Image (cartoon, rainbow, N blue to C red; front, side, top):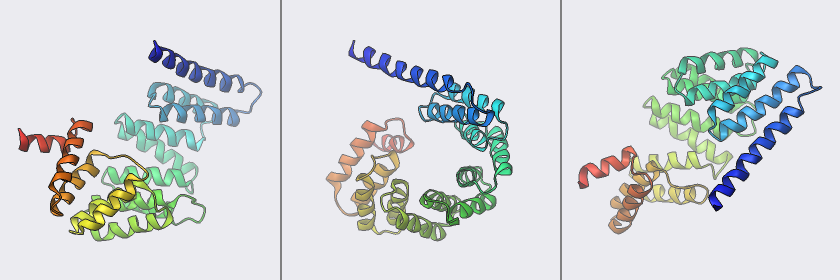
Length: 250
């Protein structure tokens, strides 16, 4: 009964938000109405309610077809549902509408790197990271480092992660990447330090646990390595890392 009550409250809260926002559309200009739908769309996207997010973002474009953030949001949504051609189409439109938009540069650059279009992806990420107007450059810097990693350019990747951490010392994705790189460089104490910094702001992933297992084994801490191994199997039983462990144990 308690779970049902909480779920009902959450549903009511979302419905209230939607009704309030929609009620405010009357009397607004098309651009202002589009912005409201974008906000709703992004809220639902963050909640992984993809159908509702898509409806709101499309409604935003009906109100204002030149809304950059609506195209940016739809592009990200199409990434999540594995429609890369549609994602690229909306990223291209957003970039053509505003080539200086930092969010579009970062998102599109990251996505292009994931699609192995490294040259253009890096160009966009460098633009996003270098503009003085970017108040969160560590996002683009970390994505640029990951792009270099995907290209096999490990030595070029590390400075991007280091720059990201100079801008934001507690940025978890950059710390996780440095944990991994430190292990690859056989700098096991540094890998451990980066993991502890990571855990002060975030929670384990299958990958951080996988690196931690091998780091502790290299340091001779077999009991701690086993603890990490058991945690990996418990928290991420379907992960690729867990499957590697299972193939050895069973």
